[in-house]
Image (cartoon, rainbow, N blue to C red; front, side, top):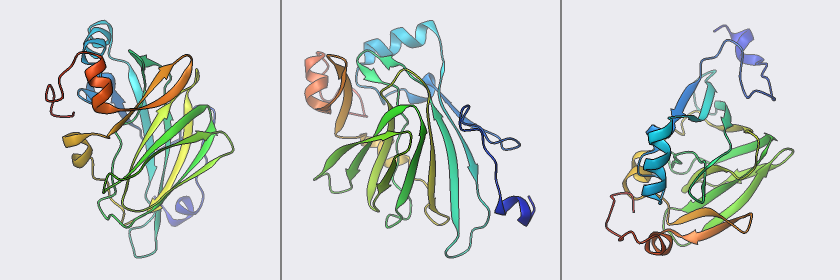
Length: 203
């Protein structure tokens, strides 16, 4: 891509796509172990393997002080009571912060500091901005009935660490109770479903 293209990128806020930029797609099968309700996950996957989310990243440069950004589209739906969500990640360079800009739809971001002392659920919707501090794991969740489309902006040096989340997941889970997104302790919800704490490596 030329410098001129780096300086201006046009995107479609309705479809969550960037013309000319490829998408990285994650299907239900790619999130095996991330949802607490294993029975509901297996039942859903036996019926279909839908796309849960897709991202289109733009990386203009990789020097000190440069920025990267990505447009994402997270589909609506649930596995059992758990909303469709992204895998979630830390930044490989832990001090790196990130800004998420909501473009359309209704959802939330699950933020958990690396020490595990604080876990927050922050709304992400159209015309809203969520600041994700450094040293914070973050996961996007679609709590609405339409695609959640948002833009993430982060330092070029940030990198992505998915391995830490794949190993232990988040300590909290967001489920639908009485029509509202509710933050629950992951182990407690697993126990309520009759699943032992050690039943899966993502517990």
